[in-house]
Length: 288
View 1 (cartoon, rainbow, N blue to C red):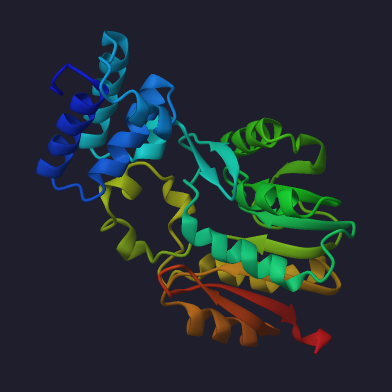
View 2: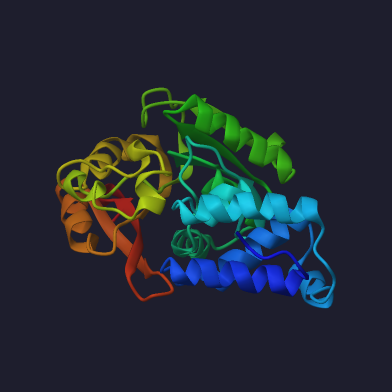
């Protein structure tokens, strides 16, 4: 158990526990959990570091630390996380948004010359709604269709839209890829499952036991979702429309080859903060 005492003492004891458990982000994780348990900001925690931590806060914090020691990710414990300046709630049916996906957002925005124009886009496999809502926050006259095969995920996306004041600009649709999608869009965006089936079971416990498997498993080669999307997406794009996809770090060539075989050309690709290939923008070859 973490020693009772001041905020600083409680925090330091928890950091040592996580370090002993081999967790490399122990200080960051402890600060996030103590902020959530206490309702204090990081600066307030620092300012009140010498004050005694209330028993109720310690009890809640202890429970959170136990969950972290059991392998549950920090933001799953907290129940929400920030993405592109938005606060997003999580549930068991949604993939936790990762910072890597910021690359996809920026690649889409770089493709749009005038962000103030009305436009309509589709987010396939929306999960928490992270991508759709981030783009809506940057495109003031845009509207989005956000689809997912999971009704639970769509409910969370709807909650997140309301939480961020974007509920009037998003339409939620339960669909297996394009099965229930209608009309044409200025662009389509997706972060599909792209991990090879054989690899999924070897993922870290933080991912394997807490992210929904169908949001991870991309089939034997990791390309099943890309095949489904590339075979149909052109029929749902307006003239001069484009498709933006997140990809695995080693999939750039494979997805590009698949795109060429299904009638697409790669316009741009982007890298995440670690310099790994992470996203690409494509257009139907008929627009060449």
